[in-house]
Length: 616
Image 1: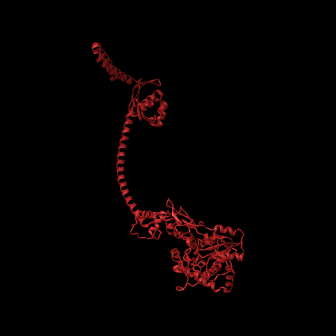
Image 2: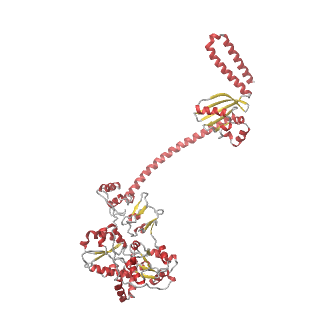
Image 3: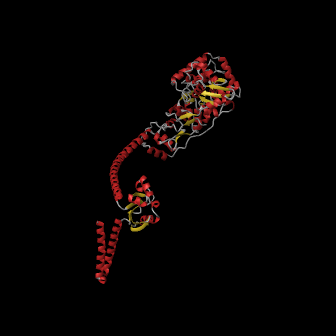
């Protein structure tokens, strides 16, 4: 049965719950978050105390209890005598009883009579000693611990129900077998204990004292609002001392004399676990029965609130017991005890072995070495929650723990991490300085490039010829006003919004016979020089150059109808003819003789004539 919840969102991964769990029912997942193995959990509640982030909680029975109260059935509340230490703020226990009745409970009984009843059965069992020593089975956490982690001791668990179960049986015997029973107490593991019983032994819901306070708050029930009301019979006797570590033994009447007594009482996490281990090994040597409780009796159970310390609570329990005993009708108590002793208070237990297989010794040694534990000197500080480094290494191998739970390993890892971090920071600082130097150089270079770009742009704008530069996507990178004029009025309008037609698609600006020239240069990385093309009834002389191989090309357009361009072009072309003819003349000079010289003079005179016109 699930008892514990962990809110992974609230968890801060301190591993406090993993460390404190006595049976390591809480393990760390691959992501470092804790998770509960509910099959291993014994419901001790230790994890609730240590979680600083309040990520650990237990299953609540409040809603189910309210549903029972609203069902119209008779519901009986059975209350652990620990109330005397838990509710010091309620001055009179009779008002406390009436507050519970106000919640809707038809009957309110104290478990102290159930304690007396079970104690009388233990007295019979122990006095009828036949060589077997017993572990008294009043603490549900103890019972779960034995069933799961010491199943070899199942036969040594006393075959008697807990006081809670006995009280539920009495309530049904007195007030009807069809009533529902809800228990209020300090114990979490009782929630599990209640689920394994049935018929008249069944407890329908178990709520902690904390949950009882929540019920009072939810229904706004306060002491000042109610009158006195006493517990319903039967009334208990020495069972009122049950919350104390030796209270149950005292109620049995069995001698606890240090010299002649047959029972050893112990409480608390470490004491309970050590006692079970020693009982398993040396029961026949010690020759004692054990009365064991996980949480200082029930005095400091996980279902209590922390309003006072252990010793103040103890004094309150004793004072409460004395007060109740003063008004006890002993004869009626004896009569009731005799009557209800006829109930079948026996029970059985089930082995539920949750022990994990031990890893190979080599694996244990490997983990210890990885933790930095010297093979000869292994000082166990137990900060990890284990008795020894070896036990911790075993738990790591079993997937329960993480190496980070070891304090010395964690400190060393952090120290090593700090060193690495410091080294990385120094490297980062050096790289940063280098990057800053490079960045400064790039910034200066960028400024120079911008200046050069501005110079080129200014130069381009002042050219009499039209010029445009495009990329391999045929997008205009820059163009001058002469190019815009060649394109016409529509381009001029666009130029006012986007100067230089930057980003425009050349294919949308020029006809295919012209942009195909650009495409040719881009694809072949070969310049096209002095190509005559008609555009808008204008003869254009176009030269296209590869500026960056297959990435960027530039085009120069000259309007051949402009006189200056015509004269310049005629000179250029005649010069080309002269150069070409000179080559030819050199080859056939002997054949042409004086004719070649005359041709050269004639062509040169044409050039001189146009140059004179240009000067004028």
